[in-house]
Image (cartoon, rainbow over all chains, first blue to last red):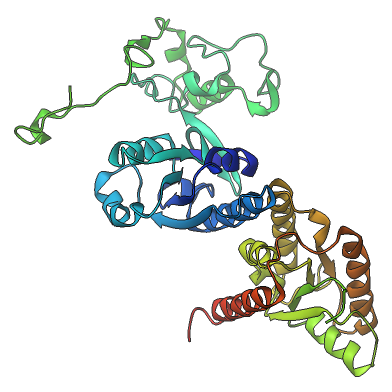
Amino acid sequence: MIVADRKKIPEIRDMVKGHDRVLLVGCGTCVTVCLAGGERETGLIGSALRMSLKLIGREAVTVHECTIERQCEDAFIDVLAQRVGEYDAICSLGCGAGVQALAERFPGKAVYPGLNTQFIGILESQGVWTEKCAACGNCKLGQYFGICPITRCAKRQLNGPCGGSRGGKCEVSDSTDCAWQLIYERAKSLDKVQVLDSLMPAQDWSTSNDGGARKVVREDQCIAGMGPKA
Amino acid sequence: MNNQPIILAFCCHYCAYAAADMAGSMRLQYPANVRVLRFPCTGKIEENYLLAAFEQGVDGVIVAGCLEGGCHFLEGNLRARKRVGRAKQFLSEAGVEQERLEMFNLSSAEGPRFAEIVREMSDRIAPLGPSPLRKNQSAMNAGIAALEKQTELAIQGGRK
């Protein structure tokens, strides 16, 4: 899932303080699960934001909250469409995709982000989320026994650990596992350590941050006349 | 109405609420501007109840739960302490003095301690002055009544 955390209240307040009516929009999908932008968090941020605005003399700003099932799909934004007319700004508590989906759908409204989108990750333990995927567009997890060195090795090394691997931990932080230690141990338990003898070529980054925003197209799913936008 | 700070006390049914009752039975004197809200456990208290109380303009909030290790539901009071910490973080970011909110632990046998906690919080909050978030007394009273209703509904699982 997409993992995010909230922006501090003063930052959100300074973005919206020039408006008269602001709608805080939570998202019921990933950011609800990572406790950043679901219904409960939207209520808390709304409450703190109203207090903050009042204390800087902007009591006149109306802040209301609502949460939709998913911000990153237009069909789910439909339920919001009627209500948005009453506001002159939207603060999205969705991920970066949600913020931009709202901005595209409501071109006449100012749209602000209330969260900092962090990464694609999983719940490691209660209250702790860890990055697992860099969305590089060229998955090599098969060669690394299900552990991604691109994401989990601080140096993104593809051919073994560096000299900073100590006691299974990365030199960057004692709380960070060395991805290569994990890869090696997993290879050993699968009796496939010899696979690691082969040399991996450098990562092809053309599928990642290259050539602007990426796009996945399934021609068979495109509706005639409504193909991918240019 | 006097000039003492207006305090909401979110009390656990099994300890602080009974202690408040005992303080009354013992005819103990403590600041009169405290209003008690009863919860089945402090673990039922959501952070948004605490923020809502401040939004309505109360001067301070007490969360009073069982002694640590003595929660009727095992760890409700420990969760409440963490939630109070997070609510303080929100208050601080919003510009409200976080000293206005505090969690206390006491047993149902501690009527005098309840009176002492109220005095302690009243003395702590008084120098901070009235909450700048309060519009007027009647708006705040209406807000508190709405909060009481909201928390009551939440406790009943939303049943009317």
